Image 1 (spheres, rainbow, N blue to C red):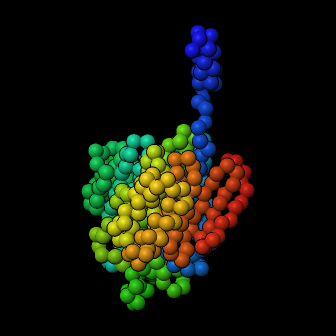
Image 2 (image 1 turned 45 degrees about the vertical axis):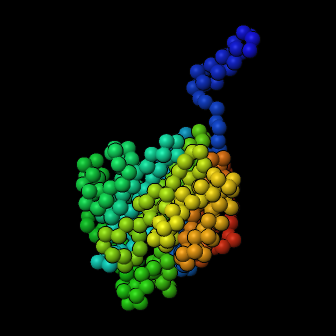
Image 3 (image 1 turned 135 degrees about the horizontal axis):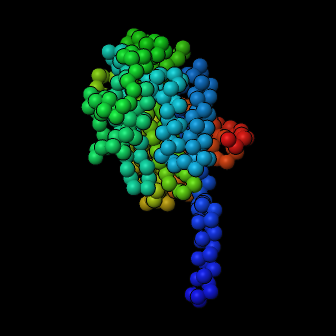
Length: 339
């Protein structure tokens, strides 16, 4: 390299970084969320679609303003934790004693940092508590009373006991106790499977993150932990491959390490995000006879969406397009204004 060429390169670098104060964008940000897979009753379809749209817009706003993928997935999940249409936070299903016990996990792909909580009570946003576990402790997973104690130490507000129990959750538990079916979706129609909420994102720097939150299984035993709190099952993110959040029958997802299996299929078999997501889900359901769903982003921003259940609500935002769906084969697109 000549001296003149070196000088030119230095001047370009100076003008781009030092003068403008910015670095060149390497990726177009993308925000992808799901609101749970299962036999979603018709009465719950529109509320889930609407909630997913609000969630994805909250996360995308973070990305559009230059925020990190980690901040974006937390923001997106918090919106769904506040929405009764979803099985997370307020709206969570109940255990056999009529109580809300929640799980959540979050992971960033740059250095594989992660945090999770399980069997948490009276916390409005378990996903934010999971992030505090990642950032403020040497651990990955805190459970039950220990997780709630940590929340108190970190100044996380505790909501009044029982305030996360929604009327629909009470009705669903009573219905399931009568029928013996512990997979009752909340709604006014026939019982169906409950889901979970989750988000994956890639920011302008190419960093990936994933987050998942749930109230678990309706009528579950007190103290039951779900796949959502298990890295590689409910949540995984790796900048070298992609990011995944899963939903569906928790014990099946945990046995199959679903999130990790999807990413490894992408890595070792050179699969696209969509092919790996759908093919691994089909293999899991064929072998273990239970259904699930997943959302995936590859390191290059490819989108993967799949479910073997009857329905799964999902949405993603890229540029000025908002994509969403809930039924098999459904893929709606809306043009939206930049925030």
